[in-house]
Figure 1 (cartoon, rainbow, N blue to C red):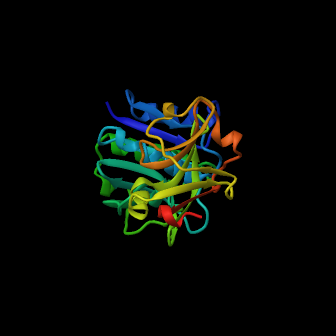
Figure 2 (figure 1 turned 120 degrees about the vertical axis):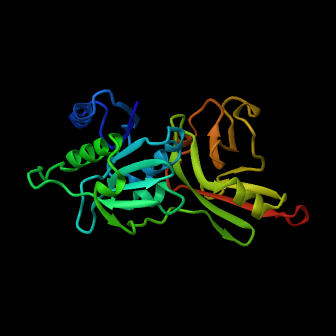
Figure 3 (figure 1 turned 135 degrees about the horizontal axis):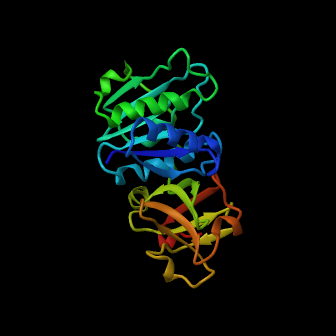
Length: 264
């Protein structure tokens, strides 16, 4: 059964959601539609990219992923379809694809709307038409005009300053855990087994230990661990770390490494 996923910045009961699902089912009866997220903050392509980047590969090959986040085109942008790793992506070429895909896509086509399509929310009709073509087997190169490149956004990455990693919070999950852009690979490479100190909020909170699970720390206590994505996460065991510590996206996380004899 063909699968189309939706990642949107619409609220759950907005008529946009019903309209696009109805049009998809009319075009492709029997289609399976999966909501990846309907709670992306308006126009927040970075959050949409994080959610889709870490979930799309769990779907079967051939799945079509529609991204309706900041999807109405502005000057210099266009609607595109992207083929990569056995999956198809449809959305506005506003930089979101460069945040989702680690590598260059296998193929890109620019999509065009029919002349009689309404300008307001015209992307809905384009997305539905394109998704319907893909799930019914229309060759990818026939659904649009070939493109070589996409608009690129540069993801926020942790930086290194001698023996210090400077990172930031990039995502707050359902449990109010604060996920950072500090990877385990970076931590191990820079740390090389040395002692360390993790500072939050300009040194207001400090930790010298990384958990392997939440339960290693008493209920209500602050902790950090590397999550299933390999990213450093700030949490409170059975608590709301982001809310209680006033952490938000862009909050600073700093890790300083030192030799025991040089700690100061």
